[in-house]
Image (cartoon, rainbow, N blue to C red; front, top):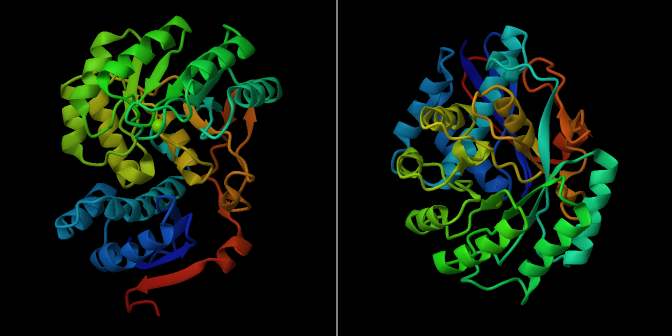
Length: 369
Ligand SMILES: [Mg+2]
């Protein structure tokens, strides 16, 4: 197959990419969320020129071509843009095989266990515990993640005492039968993270995410060494050298690549394979209800070292209005699990009305137009 056009449909928050081939294939993917309009520019300036007219079906080879031609630009936007292309090509590959991407990767689950993931720090411990309880009752979630400390917080809390209060409140309200996870988003020095970690252990928290600034793996390793609780991290990282260092030096217990920050499925699978060799679980980072959660479900449904739960954001349209009416079918949660229906490819349709209102750009070869 030969790639003949690349179209992007985007707004500031989220953007999609359509690849067409000379065989009549059509694949849909997504660049990473936020500043997605900038990622779309990168698609047309730094990705499309290298692959239009390219023939073959080795997606890894296409990734390599783009990254080598753009080797002076090893930053996040290139990978955010590449994610659109890579995920669109996996859509085509799976549709051609008549399988879902998950099935193509060797999985076939009817559902994937998820944890209900809060994104908010501007919420009181009482209000957070109350909404998590209502989600437990309505959707059967058995695992929940909430936020502690302050983002990149230099040991500060969002407001004094919030962390201690929310851990206690959520555990008491939800009871001992649920799994509780927390995310510090780079909040602490090692000494403070270890102090907080002991408190988390006292409340039976099972997962302590990004305790220290993520760019200080030595700090994170100190925290891992000092505590019994699982330490997790990696959501921002896209450089394979960083992943190798993190794995070789046992910085964390659980690895959390984000499919769209990584540049798509292909490179996420590379991290998963490295993790598998080191016998480490992978719990993908998927912090909103765009296609990143769908991509993550397909991958976690197939890899042998998937973590216990897929991250599933509980923030609705009141918090993220941009998530409205993007694609169908919508995510469906029952008994704390995300339903998988295994239609060919990613199994979704972008909403034509959403697409018609998005900023549109196309790059194409001369062969078709
Ligand atoms: Mg996180």
